[in-house]
Image: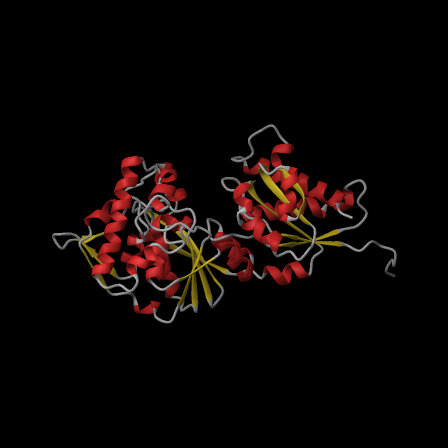
Length: 386
């Protein structure tokens, strides 16, 4: 006979982003859930906690993993890495939508020995992954652009999709930041498989292609570009735009100034040339992974990322989660937080837990320690729930 006085279980939606360099979003969610589910053993906690896990992404690295964790199928593919070496990557597919990401094809993490190649890295592998996705006959392809190692304006991707870039001698260029300045003409023969497929760029980067706020100036340094490299890359991207104009590509000049054209070293520009729609990465993935219906069935939402700071408030994934949580209590978990308590209300947060509060060690590159600390935090969250 059921005990009518038994406390009602609290239903928690665990919806974090990755802890970059340490844990995937799925690993973060599972570690927190392990602690929350042990609530019966926590002094002062009398009711169970039911956990709904929803690992998230915002269009950066981890986008494929987040889609797979929510029910998409992982499909493996080998592509050219940023320096041409083969990379074993993957896409996510649910029968209608394919998710392809830069990070696991030609991103910074795919550079051999982590050696930055600001002029020679290429986006070709991303294009090859798109070609593979198109072979599955999807209705749409989501292009997740975060984490790129190249600044080639998407030249490499376009080359994989049927474009031919030629130098002054008529020789075909493979596509890299260094090749941008060598382009003298382009021959366009886009793959027929692109016809009728909806292309969606999921990114929260709003920078234009060139200029003081463009891809080389803003993102080049983190890819190893020095001042001379930045100037050369900016000039090269201008040459790419001029070549597209000469080839009478529709809106080639205007799209270079479009918000998001500078994302992923200019891959955003190439995607716009292909007719892709540019959407907020955070909100798009919340929709794609059915966040709204899942949070409606829960009492509390737990989100987080590696670092919570001013950029988080500007619209990163935890802020989007908080904005769409419908007044439910929101708890954030992070490796560290630079957000003072008096500003928690700007995200409607009731509490921020950080790994830094639980250890003096650097957990950012210690997945085992990070997972153990998150489990302890899960227990403490459970103890504090009503």
